[in-house]
Image (cartoon, rainbow, N blue to C red; front, top):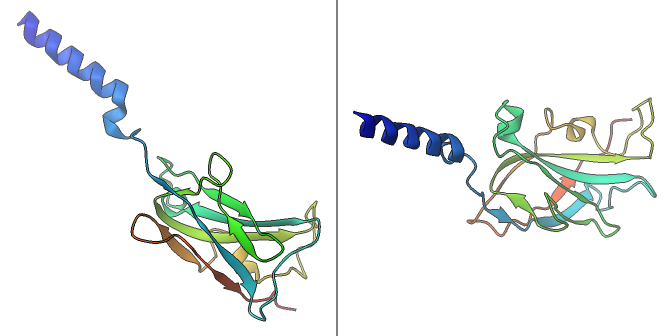
Length: 149
């Protein structure tokens, strides 16, 4: 009986220590691409915030396990490379909603007159979705509509 109790206790400790496998390393993939406006120009604000963000869908659903997002700076030619932990390391495998921050710094209080359509600025409203993983070259190009005047 003592031996069974000891084995059960050790098994329980091992499960707690490993978290039932939920902390297993997840694969990361380099992610890059280009961002342009519908007219072919690059959506940039000089000396401003020009960022693309991959927001994990599972985090938007309230599941924060392994749900780290990735972001990158949009360059003058429209190119970007994502970073999650280390510069240029990419994004974890999974589904993402893609949002953009293109604004002066500090951002104005009055959000009227932005560069891109408002729905592309928030993870909750953007229509753009991508999936990062081994079955893709993980190059994503985006064409954005302008802000409504």
